[in-house]
Image 1 (tube, helix red, strand yellow):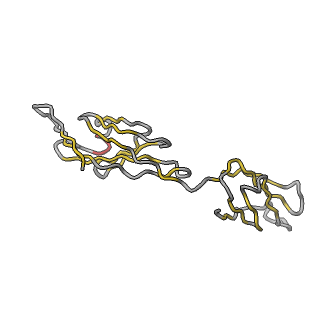
Image 2 (cartoon, rainbow, N blue to C red; image 1 turned 180 degrees about the vertical axis):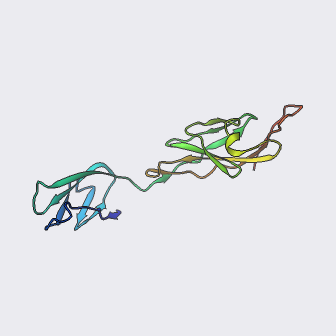
Image 3 (cartoon, rainbow, N blue to C red; image 1 turned 60 degrees about the vertical axis):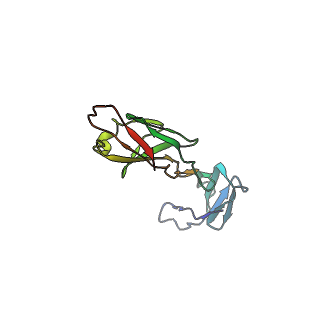
Length: 171
């Protein structure tokens, strides 16, 4: 498990005896050695109590959540552009999604469908040129990390086409 030394502040700063003891309510989840703690297993709401060695009535308690090493989210699939909106298949446990248009990244929340009109002000003119697009799932940074970007698709959106035609193709 990961070892950590809590930053304990003993007050008042002029106290003559500044020594303390760390105590936990769950020795199966948290090991205490001297002033350091080590996570032993995944657990939530583990209590860590700091008690003054001079006066047991002077104490404080914090709650600790212990997480496993974060897992990478699965990459969204089936990214498509139909000429007006992007769609894709989302993944479980994603907090949100990041749509990448060219070099611009846009957090689109939990939407698995997103209108081209809603991004033009964020990415600039997308008309009459080849534009690439990808999407990834965003994790919480604790239990899940971001996925990789999906395979890139490219499209050309004509500003005023005489014949309505939009080309969309994979890489």
